[in-house]
Image (cartoon, rainbow over all chains, first blue to last red; front, side):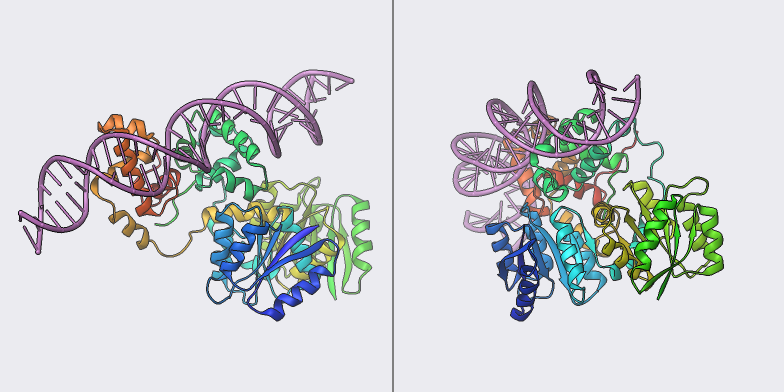
Length: 222
Length: 222
DNA sequence: CAGGGAGTGGTACCGGGGTACCACTCGTGC
DNA sequence: GCACGAGTGGTACCCCGGTACCACTCCCTG
């Protein structure tokens, strides 16, 4: 059973979601919020599996609410829904830590499939948006994994450990990494410990520096 | 009506796809290919709306075939299917110009929805892969044009605080900073606290990232 | 001279980070 | 069949990092 918190300023819209989600056995709406602040509070209180988040709302919007929920280390995954397929919304939402971005004109099955996906830790993007996202992706991501030289220490890391290192390089806490990767914090600590040991780093700060040195992490704003 | 070319080296697999796609009125399998070279030829001949492409095949694999079909300027969209969710496959496929990437364990409705999406020019990624793709995306794509905002935060630091920030960026602990600067650890903590507050950083890890972003710290490969 | 910012230093508290050690499940390879 | 590495998860413990709050000294400026 997947518990869902519905966030939308339109009562009728919330009613529609509740009707749909409660009509199938696998999902259950456990609460409704009418704006961002309320959503953040309720997410912390009832820890739903999935937060169905509208973007445009009076007061705190869905993006900011998403950012706070994710930053708070909540276990809830946020699935952002909007009527407008503006690129800025998509970028902002994903950067805020949303696990998915769907359009409100999605078919009911698509919405349910999306909720199912994010509930187990996967991510979904509306097909109409994916195309543009991929174009940007191809534009930015270097063809070959950057520095050919790299570092032998980097090679000693397993695939998972490299992912953890990248996450450390983003400044995430163990709790945040656990939430985003859908792991327990114990597991994250185990991974982090092994990464530090293999790199010969004393703490995560030195791991971050290593990540920048080998090009695993890259300066953002410029 | 969406015309589909099925490409897979396993006859049984092709049969399964044909069964599924011909069972719904909107799609029709107009051809089958057993390897990459044949796929490229057939795509050019019959110009299907969608090419359902397996990755692992003897001879020319699905990635190379995709690249050639797209490069040839065919109108066909390529939807890549594979059993293995290896990152290299995903990258290579998307770089080759594929419109989508799904796993073979997808449910029939998901596959049909994917074909429908790519047929109209959208793109789809299997939810299980999207998560990692988004992580990379966030890693490479710059957040906002911005840039000037970061510098202002740097300007708000005093001379001493900038020195402290540089030291933090070298991975030094508070104790080490105190020793090198000949200060008490209390003083260092005070400085560090002020630096974090001014930068809006949660901890020294994020301060390190900031230092790299604004160029106060620089990658030191080797 | 008064005021204020910068630099230095202290105490007290606590939460997260890091470590040590162990256990279980997979899948691969011998 | 077995061992092994990778991934995941747990418990227990200690200490550093970060915060809150305060105090004192310079030195510059109004």
